[in-house]
Structures are given as structure tokens and as C-alpha cells.
Length: 420
Image (cartoon, rainbow, N blue to C red):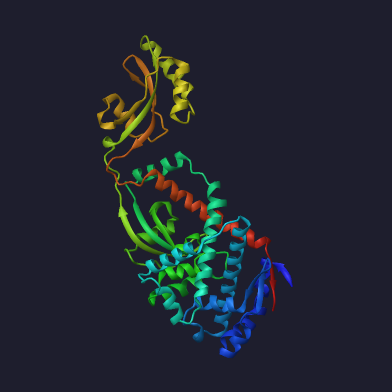
């Protein structure tokens, strides 16, 4: 029977009892290994795959689960396997591949994040009766998906300079912010019961479970491939609920489940660095200038209006200077890399509060009416994140949301063949 993915959950129960026979004992498992229970656009999923994925999701717990709990776990494992097939198929369509070396590097990252010696991950899985192929296949699918996102999603995301400047201004205006390194486990609201799964994962973490391994197994974020590691980010760029949760953590601690509009998160704080706003007088700026000479005081109002009209809505110093030259040819050159504290008093005040791309109001400068635009501003000794880091953080957040929609679209048009 062939159908679209949206019908999977309604009929998935047809395969669960049969697939769960693999756990009844060695003889049953041997009989069912290799039997195709589903296919995704003709890519097979066998009961061996389902068995391995379930053991990976719940190591050492299957024998103590009730039948309803096993069915719920099987449903989650099947959905994960379907997504992995879709990720691999999309990567193949785009001629994207991962090498054995990349897979080994991904596994090594998991080991490092869990303070394991090289080879420790496979040794732990073998001791728990989990096929090592399960973690290899999952790692490969996640690495392929990251490449798909880099190819198809990231190039479509642009972060404007004024967005970065605005984000940096928010930090300064708020008196600073924290730079954190954190890891996440993300469970989307659109899949199953994320609250119940989050509670189960939290219990495993409380029992000493590895955050990185659980992120690899459960998280639906693209960061799953690296154990959920978000890298260094600005805390105040996160969802307010996530920001509040991180604020309560000390390095090494894990948050309780945090519910947002997108789904449920578990967060682990790795490190936090507080930043301050620094001294504005120490900031270094590059300024573009537009001026109009005035013969006497009576000419000042008209000159102010002429400047304001000509420079209204100008974006960027090059356009600013072109507009200025249409007013009067002898426009002064840019002031390059001047410390605000060293500027003349009549300039220091108007410039001190400006961010890149912003203009002063018209003001009197000797025999001219003038307007200044800040082309570049570098804070000195304030510990603020770089513009590049802020842009990367904004881009990453947008990429996460688009990648989710991308995978949902793939699932919506996929054909799933359930063999009950």
C-alpha cells in the first residue's frame, strides 16, 4: 500500500506489533532481521533498522518497557528513520556525499564531548548490545543534512548590516549582555508528544546520561550532528524563554524542559562570558561629512533644510558623499579612524551616540552647516561580540527554521510504503 507521509501515524501501528517481535527473544529476532517493514521513495527500512534505532534511543531500557511504551518508542524510531532516508535522498539528488573520514570525525566529536577515549563510543554501544551501525547511519544522515542546509538554505539567508548594528546597539543600550557557549536538544511541536519525550530525556540526563549522545539521538536540530553544540552565541538573541533558562544555569548544568512556540528544548550551559559596554569616548569611528557654506546667519535655516532634504533616506557613506557633492563641490574628505574622545567638542556630542549608517542632525560648524554619517565604528575594550559573530548567530537561527520547513516539505511529498 503506497501513501503520503501524512498518513504514516494513522497506520503505523500495523507494523509495530510485528516489528516488536524482534525483542521477544533471540529466535524471533533472528527470524525477522532483514524483513522490510517500510520504504521511503523505495529506500528500504527493515526491522533490523528499527530494532537498532530503538536500542539506540533507549539503551538498556527496552526490557523494562511496557508494550505501550515500546509502541511509542517504535513510532519515534520509525519517524527518525524515515527522516534519515529523506535526508540521504535529498543529499544524493544534490550530489552531496560524506566521506568515511568525515563520519569518523563526527563520531570523534561525540567522544570528545563525552570525555571518552578514542573508540570508547563503540565500546560502550557494544557493551549495551547496540549495533554500532546505528550510530554510524545516524551520524551520516545528520552530516549529509548539514551539507544540504549549507547548499540550499544558507545561501538564501542574508543578514543586513543594519540588523547587525541594531543587535549590537541593543547590547550597548542594555548595558551589555552575555556570550554563552551552549548545547541544545530540540524536539519540535509538530512531532509526537515533545513534552513527554523531553521529560524522558531529562530523566536519562539525571541518571548520568550524556547530553551530547542524547542530542545526537533525539534532537531535530541540525546541531544534532555535533552533539547539540551551538557554539558561542549572544544570550539575548535567543528566544526569551531560552534566554531565561540559560540565565539560571551554571556551566555544566542542564535546564529543565523549556517550551516555546516551536517546540521543547533542553539546554546545557558550557560557559558564559559577561560583556560590558565600555567607554564611548574610546570608540574609533570613520565619518563622512556633508556641508554647505553660509554667508550669514539669515542663510542658515535654508541651508539646514537643503541638507536635510538631500540626505534624507541615504543608506551608506558612498551614497551620502555623492549626494553631498551635488550640493556643493568642495565637500571635505572623510575622517578616518578617529577616536571619539579626540574629536572637537562640536563633533564629539553629535557623533557619540551614533551607530554605523546613522546621521547627525544638521549643526553649525564654523561657517558651514554640516551633517555627519558614521561609516564605521569600532568599540575598544568593551568585550562585545564581533559583527561577524552576531551575523553568524542571526543566520544560524534563520537557517534552523528554514531547515525544519525544508524537511517537512520533503516528508509531505514523499511516498511511504508500509508493509504491515
